[in-house]
Figure 1 (cartoon, rainbow, N blue to C red):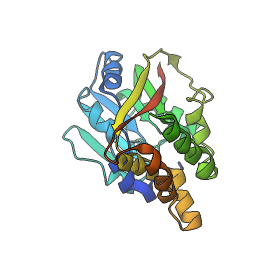
Figure 2: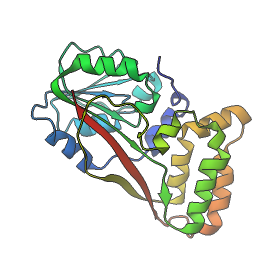
Figure 3: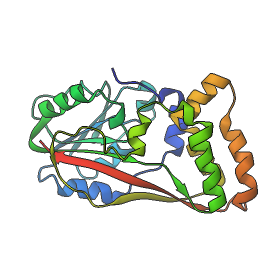
Length: 247
């Protein structure tokens, strides 16, 4: 059973999580000569699923969290299912691609990879990516956000978060590898938008549950004097690490 760290922050997640660059999905499409069906695993609120629908005839989107799936927008080419990563509900050799956005580190990989091999067509693509720790424009802002990430809510990150910080380099990936171009998420955020993103973290939710207080309120007070005008937008960057390969 895959752990569910996000049901408690599902609404904040859909409101505040950054979206992936369109170039990432265009690259995925170039790796799949046939694009009839893609299985998007750990789909959450459907961020990647909707983007994949621009390139695949059908997107089969699954997630363990019913609360997350309930936040996903409807799309005529996307079918959502609540299920763990090792039970897709798909037939043998039916998928042209399997995608995992910001979720591979939560899975029982032996069982998941067995399911991937079962549902992927021969030569089909599996691509899993994660975006790392954010960087915020401005040294004073970056210092405070980094302290919040590592020291304030740091003890509340699940152990699997380590694999995000190491760009999935330590995770097994038993497929024929293919190199991807470099990708990154870049957004210009207001202070309120940045704080909303911090509230969507699983570690923030676990901090609140453990202490009964909102750590982001203290972060807001620390950032306000160094941010500038409240409606000022600062560039926030998340590097993306990709593991991709063929069956």
